[in-house]
Image (cartoon, rainbow, N blue to C red; front, side, top):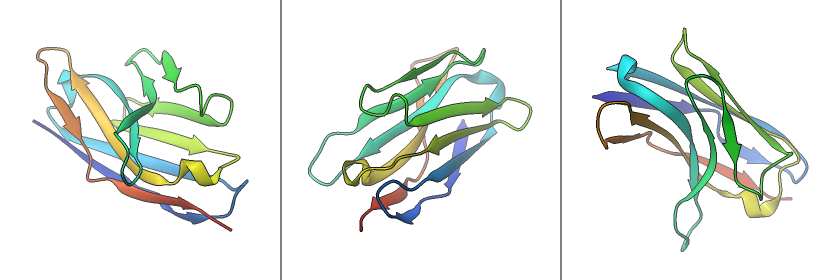
Length: 117
């Protein structure tokens, strides 16, 4: 079992920045990839960014060039630096992790990001 605890959400103006953090605990050695998904009201949850244990990252096309995912394996923490935020980035952002050893997926509680003038 892995537990994910998020922080860093909030209200920002268009063009602003936020940095989300997610700390993992529990069976952390089972974690392979970590990342961030988001879900806007009435929309399906979508992948934002993913990072492997080695540090290889992938981004949704809508955030590429604006968001940066990073990972501190020693602290079992993943970050999402979000720059040049747009109103369409407004969503609940969920931390994600998967396991080397099973099909298990782990989710954080979600943190609200609102981009509005």
